[in-house]
Amino acid sequence: GENVEQHPSTLSVQEGDSAVIKCTYSDSASNYFPWYKQELGKGPQLIIDIRSNVGEKKDQRIAVTLNKTAKHFSLHITETQPEDSAVYFCAASGNSNSGYALNFGKGTSLLVTP
Amino acid sequence: DGGITQSPKYLFRKEGQNVTLSCEQNLNHDAMYWYRQDPGQGLRLIYYSQIVNDFQKGDIAEGYSVSREKKESFPLTVTSAQKNPTAFYLCASNGQGALNSPLHFGNGTRLTVT
Image 1: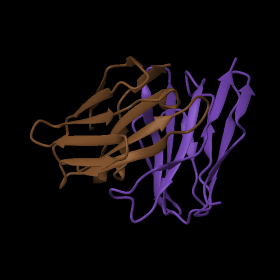
Image 2: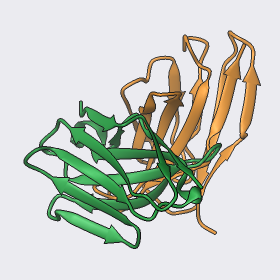
Image 3: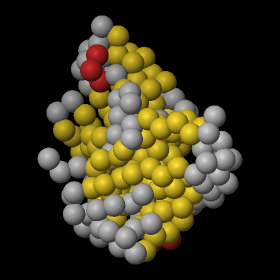
Image 4: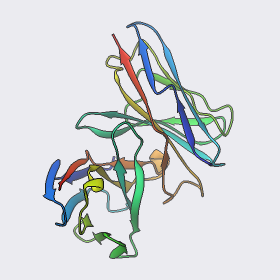
């Protein structure tokens, strides 16, 4: 099945700095790439997603870029704030054999220090 | 508010006992999923269901069973055959035929088996 690699596993930045998380995927047929934020003891929440017909998408301080040729996509958070501290997961769409269920990376624990 | 409800939040069982985790959604979504989350392992797909009375195995289905008798409900049973059942279990759903549609997650059930 789809293999999604995510780096780094932990990331510490100072408040106001930018944070970048990178993911690669293996299935060239994947065409949907969401990012989720998970706070302690809660389920993941969608923060942004991108489809394969788009190279970049922004939503305020958050942006995602996609390079389909290289099969990698990245999450960029600018002007980080302490409330951005959480675990972030990237995901890539599966295929019909798995009901198009998402395949997730192993997560990045982001810590934003004041 | 529409959403996904998982209950209970914490569950404790003795080894050798079967246990059922509840998942209910009022989003009118056709597709529902169960993921397992372990520290540093990301989210791994256990079972999914694209429509009532139909479900399919995911990547780690051994030792688990599900049913989908109603659109709103997708309970997961962790059987005594599951060798390492202690984990955080997440239920999710999506609509629009599931393809390229964002997943909505519940807040999870943390199962501890001793």
